[in-house]
Image (tube, rainbow, N blue to C red; front, top):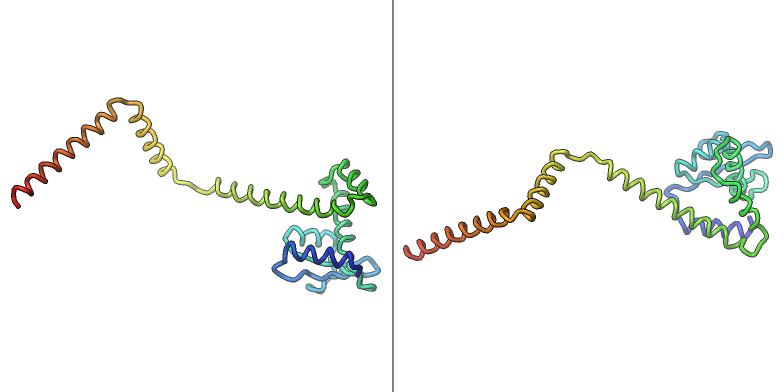
Length: 187
């Protein structure tokens, strides 16, 4: 393995540590991919499904032992694009190719990875907010809250609403004074 490949793997490990160790996949000379965890041959489509399910994997060349994960991931993208699943706009692909060999080549991968991580976090936040918004709610409770809000609003706009409240408070105050006077007279 090259030191650049090792550095990239180390950076990836620091950014997110998978809950389970990555599945080791070996690619043989006949282009077949072998999942060592399940002891079965897999396709690029199977690997794409693993990614969607959040399962990490690494792919090694069976003969040389080189890490060829990046190459296999690129093959998955090419297959998805060939199916008509056009996720990457042509202009983006042209710009990306233009960065190869240029002075920005070392910066672009980190920028793209950070951008995708931010996009993923925003997507999760939107999902959580939608789940909260769609939680079952009580029409009865909503009706009660609406009624209380309307009563408060009406009392603010009605001069009689406040007067009635004041009269009730004065009556209560007078009643308490009378009870207090009666207690003092007894005592």
